Image (tube, rainbow, N blue to C red; front, top):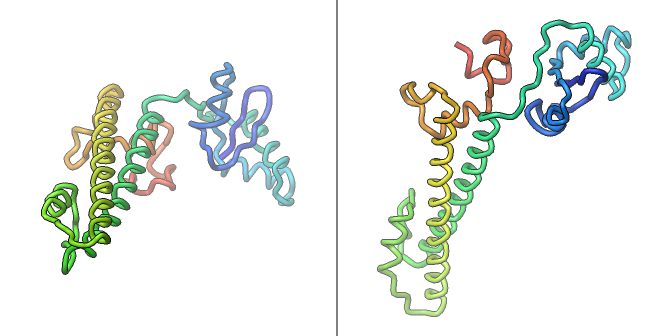
Length: 218
């Protein structure tokens, strides 16, 4: 992926993309930024260097040349609902991962406290029920029980954060005016992830122009 500003080329890596980092900074400064597909800049570089060695300078010149001579390049748009949804869903996924790790540690502690352990699929409700019935007779057992109690509090905190972020995602989806939620089987979280990852679908000229997102092809 390459980016070009009117009046001069700008070379960027594949990450961050046109919706983050330098492109948004330049847009906020009043510049017009164009998204130059990597295939076009690669072809221009090969033609101008006669297949010479790839370098940042050669890539920057190729991006600038394509921006000056190729019609129909898509302007980079300012951040919108898609970027907000991307941030919210990624943050919620982070909390979900922490919750899973906390439940795994809780499962290990309960396994040592209860003969035979506890079944798989441990949940917050199940953990609380099991913990209420524990009366360890040794200092080691009481220490494990106290650690398990702390982990249950941590899981409860993370689940509350996950619920809060799901509500924020739902509000942002409503503000975006998307119709994704009307499709059968599309949940709030799934809709947020799709819009956060894809962004404005109008940037794809056809289904065949989204090779990085094959699941979107009919």
